[in-house]
Image (cartoon, rainbow, N blue to C red):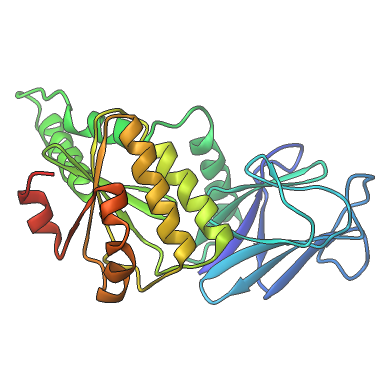
Length: 275
């Protein structure tokens, strides 16, 4: 997988900058891979670090602001990055993106511009996208209309990806599968909480959290899910959880009397029960 910074504004809008080393520095000094002289850019302003299949950004404590999705990073702190995240370093602004397939430079630039074009304008929430897919108008005399309707229904069943989440619907239940394997890093949990809140804003939902992929979880993560239950309850929504590993289920069992939620060993059982 190849990691790119895509320039989002200015004369070089759409320029894809490949990050091909494990530590990529932005700043004003000669040791930085991306150099720009500006009063709002520090000598060693920030660094992008690649570890395995994940990318992180670290503010280098220069005293100049590093912004991720409009939030100022605390000095010398490290945050994880995901596809579509926006990073601002002084006047420089980038969108984070990834690509598996190799392209020549011309095709790569076209791909980068397309990513920016798709990102413009307000985005529908995952639930809005699913509602649209489930209510496609079909022209019975048009084969293409019928085919598009079938594809939309299949996509709705498969779900919509939002950051660390895959959100789908079955009957009246909204299924939220968490794609992260480890829920232990505080910075990751901040982003996960935001994604959950951003995509579950509709009232009176029945939300099923699917932990199939999660192998480890911190007590901070467990507390976050407790807060989520309370937040959903204020909107008239209910929450259940399924497919937790035994050690994770044990962590949450003590919270059941406090927050009144259900734990199910598998997804099918959760979909069949009333809760």
